[in-house]
Image (cartoon, rainbow, N blue to C red; front, top):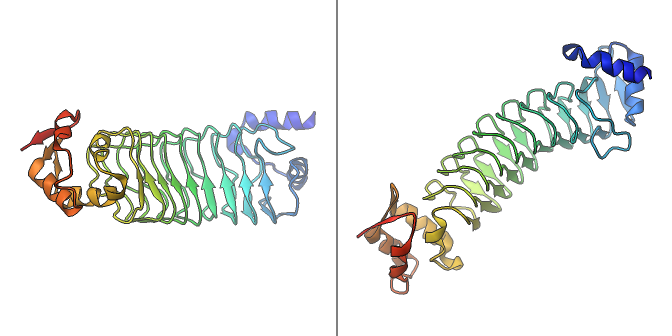
Length: 292
């Protein structure tokens, strides 16, 4: 019963959320099945191992806030599937994965500065301000309310996953992504800010793109379904697609919703399709006006 009373006290005084004594801190850590911890003189906590406060923990209790200030965790830190509105209390350093997905967060302020991989999907985030600048592996932040990638990490070692947000361009994304870049189900009208290099595939399906200017030339595979430009790209065999996109941009074929026929022919010539291309299909496109 004293735990219920203690939580009630702290819920009514959220700005003073941390325990005030060594014994309270120790009791809570033990109750949450956290081992190999050190409680410092200022009651901050170091843990040599994982901290699991998530819905997958065997000692799971829904958290509205974290009542302990973690400092360093030499393992993973998992607080997904709670009712958190703030990351206050999270460690500054996490040597492995950090997962705060499926909460009620609108900000990443208070999250770790150092992580191996970072997961914050299914929240209400409106900004990436506060997130780590270097993420060694995956950065997954899909299913939020983001309208911009500004203030995000400058380097992501593996996959960069931002589908199901409100993005209209890619400004603020890292210069290089070594894995997949997944940005489907947004409101993209431009690929401005697209990384210079994408090591895996680029998926921009279900957006509003009419041209692919600023696309990385180093991406190997594209997924582009349900965009205005899809109807044009689908007229070209998959093996020619990468070069077709390159020459569409190089010859500035698409201008303000117009498709310049002479320039298209130059692009098709560069991929050996000038003669085989069925030009009649251009005149049934829904999203472009053909300029002869």
